[in-house]
Image (tube, rainbow, N blue to C red; front, side, top):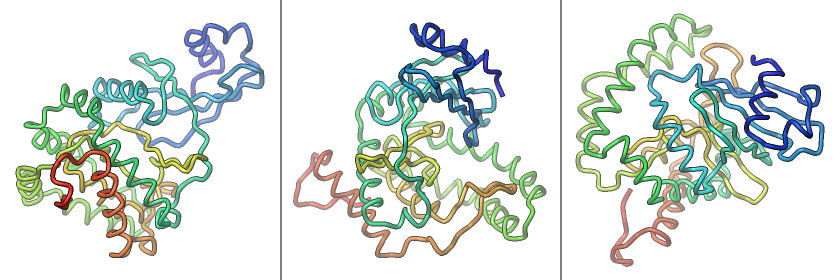
Length: 297
């Protein structure tokens, strides 16, 4: 982990009044859980505001992440006040605003109707934000995104999954990863390309929806964080990911750092409610067609 003096210098360069109100001894630094890079929470014991700051270092970013695109999209999200804001960004790190969630989401909470409703509205706003879609199109033209996504994800994951299976500690973990490996075959690639070829609702998708990437704030709002994998996709993909990833606990302490909790899987009625809340937001704010005609997912 970076030394206190390194962190102090980083923040001094970002905030003009930081060095006049804080000393290195005034900082408390802790490491936050993050899969794709190093994330530090810095707290100050002085009157300096903000007194909680996140510093995200890009040294351990996943091979499938396009670093420049991720930085550009995060800057756009920050500019639009869409979620977490950034104070500063360099090639090596980003200084982010710290948002205090009222509650850490879990599979159990993600089944609650109010949480489902909050999430559906936030997701719809992400999907149909015109500025985000324009910015994303500069890096990932819609005409080429399917081949690019399969090349990035398929090539990397096929090589990595066997190594992950060897490191598993339980038979259940090995079984899950073997099933996942089985999905990565030519038939899946063909099905995916065929699906997106006739999909008329390709949107700016998050592509990594799970409890760890959702924050419930005290204003009764669920916001999305961690946009490393943002790309175009059918809008139903993020909804389906919510319904499936609800079973995954990514706070599991043993490799591969997740556990499968089937008891939290959404029922058919809960999935129908999720989709109806999403479409309710879509028709109220973004649908430009005949109001009497329903829009399928």
